[in-house]
Amino acid sequence: MDPSSLLQYLITGLTLGSTYGLTALGFTIIFNTTGVINFAQGEFVMLGGMMSVYFMHSRGFSEPAAVVLAVLGATMAGALVERLAIRPVRDCPTINLIIITIGVSIFIRGLAMLLWGKDTHVLEPFSGNQPIMFLGAAIMPQAIWVLVISLFLLGALKMFFSGTIHGKAMLACSFDSKAASLVGIGVQRMVLLSFMISALVGAVGGVILAPITMTSYDVGIMLGLKGFAACILGGLGNPFGAAAGGVILGVLESFGAGFVSSAYKDALAFVILLILLFVKPSGLFGLKDSKRV
Image (tube, rainbow, N blue to C red):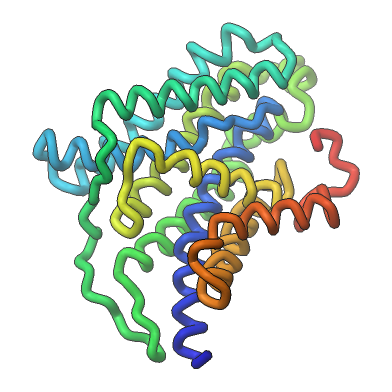
């Protein structure tokens, strides 16, 4: 296989892996604050793409305005999930809350199907679709948008968690919510914030991916599962391990599709996950003595 093909697989893998990483970040943010794995995270990704298409094609907004409205709408959806589905039963065992998130995922997917139908929708690339040739590989302008926006979000989250009061308060909740409450941190407010941030991150992932893979009411299922696999691959509870896990998963998936067959690329993610769980259950960047795992 020639070097340009390898470079092409690498670029494709980095592009897809970035969106898996953003989805995995959403899982991690909520898990760190609540101990709950939110299986509705993939639906936030779907809402980002579908709402962008809706605002642009049905309401006549320009693409930038539609994207902003879609991200804000998905963020509000995250807040509603926390207030209406999680907070009323916050004292239930964690497994009950996880099952509730599965129910929320089914509800959001069904609602999206009723509102926007079963068709697959296209969102226009942000800056055209003329490929850029680099060392024999074709790079779509949208792939550059995906990589740049993913890196920007990762840096912004790093600054948020390490340099702001709210970020540090959320980290305190992740270590010990009772102790955080005793020092005056509003734990429920942090939980609400974690759902909103994770929905925002997921929606951005859905928006930037929609011009490449298109979108429909059910894209959140597979993206959510792959985001969860990336989260486990990087180490559950480690935000930047989750992002790295997404990139690794995307690259392996791309090379697997190129060297074996694209028909097996979805299965490859879960084969990797199973192998890792047998060899290193805490993930590539997780701690062996993690209590949450």
